[in-house]
Image 1 (cartoon, rainbow, N blue to C red):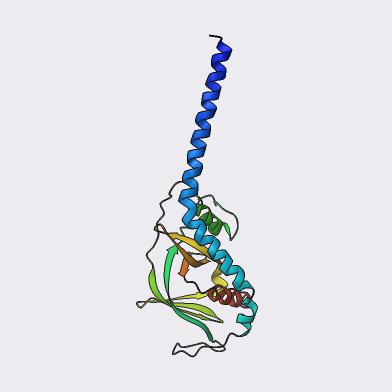
Image 2 (spheres, helix red, strand yellow):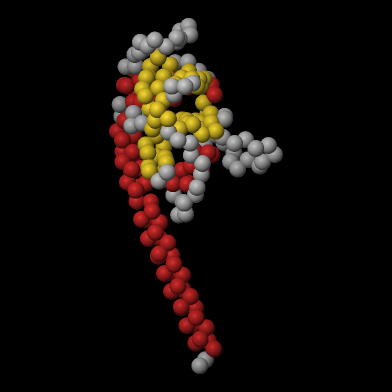
Length: 202
C-alpha cells in the first residue's frame, strides 16, 4: 500500500478522534454549566428590571429606627438577617500579583463558574447574620461578634451567582482589602445602598 495513502488514512483517523473528543467535551461542558446558565440568565433579567426603578428606590430611602447605637449624623437604611459567608484573602509576601486591579478577584471567581473541571476551593460556611447598612458603615452581627466595615475599606461590590458546594446562589459580592464577603439575598437593593454610600464616603 502506498505510504502516502497510509499517512492520509492516519490523518483522517486522528482528525476524527479529535472531533470526537471535542464533541464529548462540548457536551460535558454544556451539561455541567446548564444549571449555572439558567440561574445566571434569570438573575441578569432581574437585575435589568431592577435597574429601571433603582434611582426611584434610592430616592425614597428613609432612615430605619433601631436600638443600634449610632454615631453623629448617622442613620440606618437597611436591616435584614441574611446568610453570609466571610472568606479571608491570603496576602502572601513576595508572591507575584496574579491580577492587577480591583476587579481581578471578582473576574477570577466568575471564570471558575465556567471551568470545565471542578476546582476545589476553601469555602467558609454560611452564617445567619443580622446586616445593618448605615450611611457611614456596614455592621454585621452573627450573634457572637460584631464586624464593622467602613465604606472607605470597600474595594468592590457586585451582583454575583456563587457556586457554593455545588449549589448556585444569588449573592451580593463585597470585597475589602482583607476579605471577601458573600451576602445570599434576592434583595437587589442591598448592592444599590452599599454603592450609594460607598461613593458618598470616598
